[in-house]
Image 1 (spheres, each protein chain N blue to C red):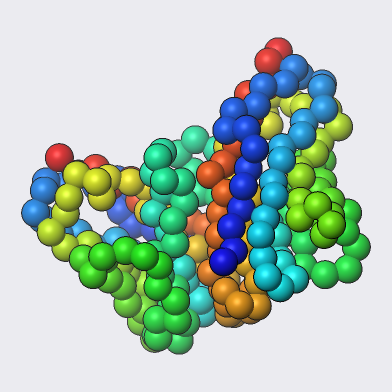
Image 2 (cartoon, chains in turn purple, green):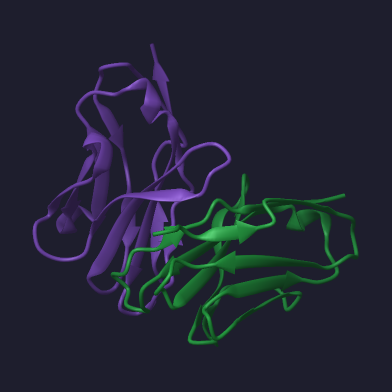
Length: 114
Length: 114
């Protein structure tokens, strides 16, 4: 069965510091991986996605993620945190077995300290 | 292009009542998925509709149902409301049913059951 594990439900970083949010997945077939961000009282917004091809994926707002098959990971990074990055981040997986059904991690709340 | 819209944004109901939530997908999108988001359980998949047919269903009781209309708009219904049904209900639309299609989320309907 497909699943996603996000290590660390809460992450705090200083403004300007590196952001690293961890995501590990399980899938019996090649996965499609997504990172979404959710601001308070809003829906989810896609940051980036990996389907095929280049394993380093660049997204919006300076975020990027690298698909590492050997580690079954898809960690999200940003070189320099900004106050506006404070939000909830969700990793999700789908694959050809799940159709259009996404499996989400439990989320990581990012706090940016000024 | 207008995004996914959900109505109403907020609802307060009492136990035993029923509720209907509405979702209008992005123009041209034919797949609509519904998710329940709670602090304890995170994002849980409810069901997915494509061309007026339910394609996938999550592990929720039969009190949760949905439908999709010919214009791709979707509704979900919850009957005999329980306190535990209090949650943010998110609707997401996508172009098709392939696993790599990203899902675009609406702002959600916040349901409170008293």
